Length: 542
Image (cartoon, rainbow, N blue to C red; front, side, top):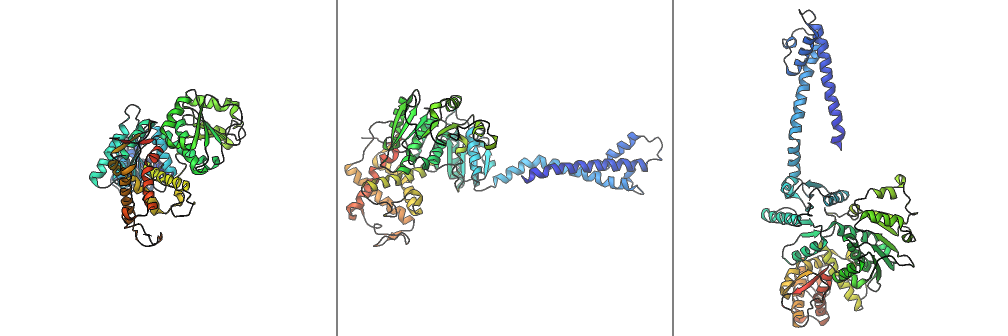
């Protein structure tokens, strides 16, 4: 901002200097050469211009000169030097900028010139983070790859779905070779189905730090989180549409619903579209959160009767979405903010409807609320440069969430133990323990003789018998190693402040049965946790 304000004054000063030199030089030359034979005004102008290159004959020899010419013969060369300096600066400005950016640290790099790249970059800047852009992954070093904290690969993948995947793979190889660079690598994948398949393959390998995301999914997750508290007492919501955004919103609402309402209540979600039945079957078969917490009802139109507590209008065709929100009067019977129009290409209309003094269209007395897909990414700022929780953090949350569900069903009281609290209220040690569980997922899969894949709605694999106890034994060893790594030690009485736990150093065979059952629960819940993310356990040899 400072540079932008200073530049016009610099130009004005340069022009003033040149004008002053020409005026004083012409005036002085006219006086000092008045007696020269055959002198013309063209001669005066020619010698005046020569002052800028130190070649004006009447002024070169010095001696008695008019004060006007004395000033001009110094001002003109100064203006010439100024022009040369500015030319050199402009010539090397881009190179100097790249050198500065190469030395930047702790920033985010966004690769690509797509809408997704722009949305991610804007969201990061809104969160107060430094963002450097790169046209493609060949420009990453110029964008300070060595000092970057995160890379978002967001090139256009409509023709080549692998372009962003290959970009982060290349960066990961570079980071390993150099021993320094970003530890978080995110690849935008336009196809949500492909993104899930890629997540499955990455989670099953030993490497970590890579995630695959879809802009619509991030937007839906953010919108559901934003509306979660206001929907805590809701009984039914409707989602109009069956495209990627609408489906992602159904999944996100199902997940958030259980967190705010508890495990006993179920939410009715009306999926409104011509192909709603097909879409609902696919969603229920893929996502465990939907079948566990919601009653998903496919309909072609919102039925007569009490209006849903919230109606989200988000079909793929935004023109149709706009027409639906502004013309279907059956949707206008809710409370303030109950009709939500989700916009992307038509984002400019948000200001027309919700723009305060700039508003030129009625928003149904506050019932119609517009949200913009790109703006949703900036809903929750993070202390580090990112715009979403990656799959590792979300899986760690899911591990804890399933643990809470199992303990509550056993009658364990809320907040009766340090772990019987929401994720946000856990100590950092307990969070790290859950994150360690996620990082050890490849080892679990190897022990069970299987892998993970996108969930297809069929009967999932189960773990029981001797295999269950073998894996539970390994689970106890993993729990102990994570705790010891965090500085915990054995003691007769648990003390979280002093990091003392009575189960550390105790072998599986010597554990009490309730403690063994906790480890078995973790293994039994593996399919349930994976189902939360549209994944399932696949055994190579059933």
